[in-house]
Length: 254
Image (cartoon, rainbow, N blue to C red; front, side, top):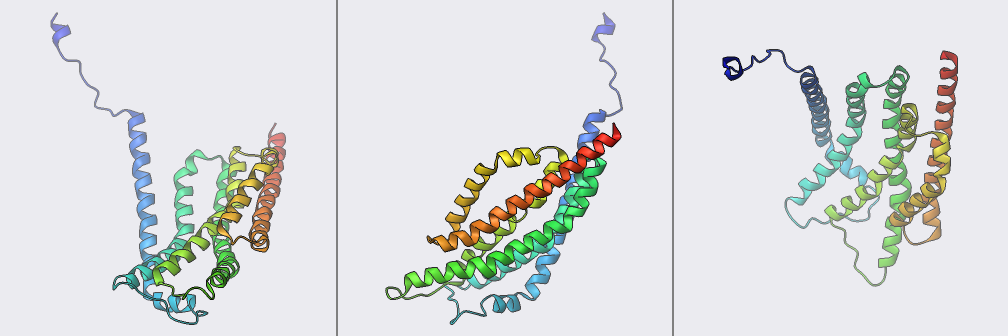
């Protein structure tokens, strides 16, 4: 009877599963802090040169942008520095993500991901450059032609740069498509056969994206649709090469 009433002794050892979860959370916290510090350093450096960056971005404008409040110039400078810091921090974030998931990845996927880190940054920059030098001027000129004759055109700094960022940053993300598909192929989540079967749906979605962000004329749509289609086909081709290489390696091991 006394034995039943006495409390059972508790083990001083922690549950290994709980300990593993705590270690994973601690590792994630460290990776996030390092990425955040890299972003802060990059944004601080961008703020030092933000006036030069601003003058370069508005170099082709006939007049000056309008400010509607004393704090709007700070918003403009912060958003410009933020985009620059995002571009600089992207490879750091990709590397920290790779280090966090590295223990769970097979050896082949680990080698592929470390190679993809600089490619991710390059594709993001190429996407932003394409949108800024090709798409953004085209859409802006179209809007200006619509306003000619009936409206007095006057751009505020906040509206102008908000419009610019909405036109450029999404394209930087869209141009990550090949790197993402290669990584998913390495993990076995997708393969070229699935991508080929999903081609019609992918084309349909890419057309919707292109028509949504471009002026309502066929030439503007084609200028955006063709690169997006090429990106998808390049992604399928690279996925096919990676998939066939994985098949050869698996046959050699067997």
